[in-house]
Length: 226
Image 1 (cartoon, rainbow, N blue to C red):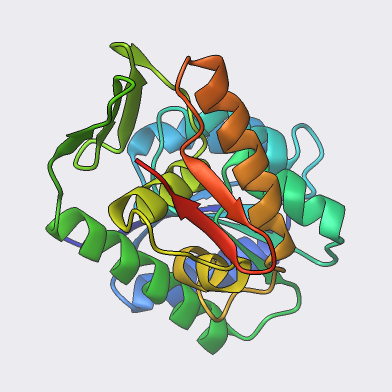
Image 2: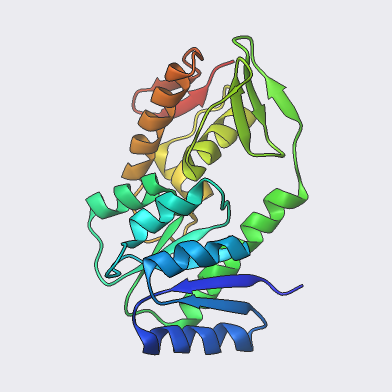
């Protein structure tokens, strides 16, 4: 079955270019000209979303926040310019990567394929549920976290950091290693966003009643303690 790709951008020539290019590669491509249309088309369960940041009715960050609760696929932001604050906002909203305009089609196609391969590997090797002493439970197959039986709402990258650290409890990961593992070596961002995600993850776990599982080893990185 071909991968389904959602392209959301208010520039008609770019939408047409991407639709033609990815259709020729065998993808099924849906196109949205606005943020509201993108939210509606997200119901088609795409395997990956290319999402323009600057759209007139609803920007890409807001679209990402609205659909992330029920869409788990990779979301790649398309933008002509990005500052560190934008990257943090985008990743916090649940985005996975940034693609800077103008871009080469070859690079974009390679990056889309890399995200889909990573997603496919994760789906092909589901893990069992793990429960910790404080009644914090991680269901790796369902990508879900609960504490005392109640769901802990995590953004996609927050969950992925938790999964990476908890699967390798006791092992220290520096920011660069976490960034490369979850965003990919080809990503345009900075490892500085890792600290922001871990800050939010810790706050959500604490609010749910879990004890401190993520330990900071100053000058070295982070590790999961059981």
